Length: 327
Ligand SMILES: NC(=O)c1ccc[n+]([C@@H]2O[C@H](COP(=O)([O-])OP(=O)(O)OC[C@H]3O[C@@H](n4cnc5c(N)ncnc54)[C@H](O)[C@@H]3O)[C@@H](O)[C@H]2O)c1
Image (cartoon, rainbow, N blue to C red; front, side):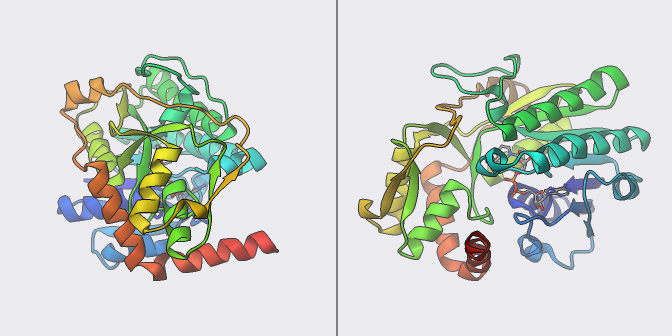
């Protein structure tokens, strides 16, 4: 099988590439990645030189490069996106360009080249916020922040390409991921790397916001199931069944890093901060036999250990970001 993986140098996309090359002998993977601040070729070091891997440095919103890399592919797994909510509140331009225009450019190329399946990787954030209960795949989208709005736009485009143009599209919506190789701006790697350096961690508001956590390897395993057996035009939720407030998560991270509460700085909540996300994952359990395999306590301990042992991966990224913030 020939797979085009967009965003394959990012956190989740690189896990998918590493796992595919490890577990699916004979599969040929083309990665298309713009290498934005969160894309990192070092994430593919474990598979560098693998005969099944081709890397193309390019933009999903560039029709020429997209046309070239899509030709001859059997399937597309589309991860590439601008992903950090805080950045989308400062400026949404890159989010609309990459998440909406980039997705449309890929969908058109996939249609033109007769790709047999297009998996569009999305997020629970497209639904907005829910105080009680869980969203099903039929719940209407109601995004609050620009990141989520741009992802919702891309989901709807992908589904429209199925309904109107007949492209075999499947959409996945997943809860918060954690694990190795996550850029240290997202809460778990930000807190862990700060704590390992003895620096304070910023906790938004009272820390009441609730998220469900899933190990990145479970997410990628679920995407593989959807790629192989998901129903054309279907939407599949993927979750971890581990819901925590940010305050509870902070306590676990302090404990795992051997740090105290005096390193926690309460900072004003960000605008439009969704209180709670919760996905009903019974459809993917029932139809595809999915269940998360990594218990949160084990996954978190392994993640902290990875950041402890891989300072050479994250220190340059953090110091580059800090230098950019000072300029
Ligand atoms: N991280 C999570 O918790 C989470 C949860 C649910 C869904 N998702 C979705 O999973 C996908 C991957 O998320 P992630 O956390 O790995 O993100 P990430 O920010 O770590 O990686 C994004 C990758 O996309 C690349 N990219 C960005 N713009 C591009 C463009 N225009 N052309 C080509 N490449 C481009 C970046 O260089 C980077 O390698 C996203 O679509 C995101 O919405 C993420």
